[in-house]
Image (cartoon, rainbow, N blue to C red; front, side, top):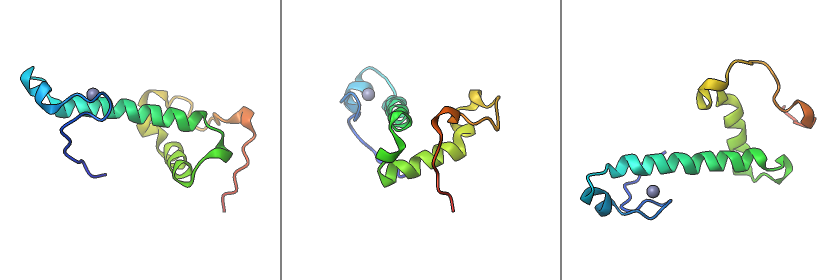
Amino acid sequence: MDKKKENVCFICDKKRNDCMKKNDDFEEHVEKHYMWKYIRYICSIILKKRNQYTDEEYLFWNQIRDKKKDWFPEAKDDEGEDEDEEEEEEEDED
Ligand SMILES: [Zn+2]
């Protein structure tokens, strides 16, 4: 993913200049907020019904599933356990 240099935080509209005035690290700020946006995105996907996914969301969901150990490093105790157990998945994986 390209890291585009922005001058305004796209989450809270905080400006790079404002950060610099306060000696805050704007990059860090944006990254932090970006992370929250990301988490919200993930949550929205998780909470969404799978048959309502867009193609993009479906791909993203699959990535989450594949990489969830990286994403949620503290939640890897129960490897092999199916967290969707009560949902009766209908996946056609060829
Ligand atoms: Zn922000």
